[in-house]
Structure formats: C-alpha cells, structure tokens
Length: 96
View 1 (spheres, helix red, strand yellow):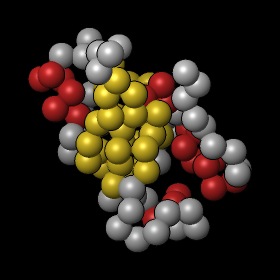
View 2 (cartoon, helix red, strand yellow):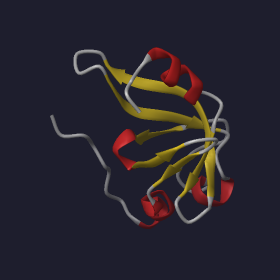
View 3 (cartoon, helix red, strand yellow):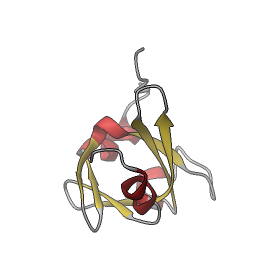
C-alpha cells in the first residue's frame, strides 16, 4: 500500500481475518502518522466475540498495529498473533 488517500479510505468497512482464516472484525477507522505519511494502526470493531470476549467489552473495538497486516485485498489479513492476544498480558506498543 503506497499510502494514497484513495487507498486509505477504501480500508474502512473491510473485514479483517487472521492469516489462519479466523474472522477478527471490521475496520472502522485508520490511525495515521502524518509526519511519516503512513498508516500506524487499524481501528477494528464488530469484533469476533470468541477472540475478544474476555478482553474487550461489548460495543468496543481494538487498535491493530499496521505492521501486523500481511495482505490487503477484498479483506485484510493480519498475523495470527491476534489469535493469541487472550493468552498473554503483554501489550504490543510501537517504540518511537
């Protein structure tokens, strides 16, 4: 993805799946780093209850670091790391 505004806006509404084929949620917004002119994370809602029931309340969403994105097409594929979020207490913060 080369970061053009057209491509960024087309991400909203796409479904997100792990690269193992597990539904994660739907992209509701995109977080940008304007200085670097890059996407930093995806705001995902309509979450898969099985993945997030113990960690995210109803009606809430999550931010997925863009570096987890493996492919962008009709759907967005992210690392299977997302499936292991409930198994760890570690947070994956971007280091400046």
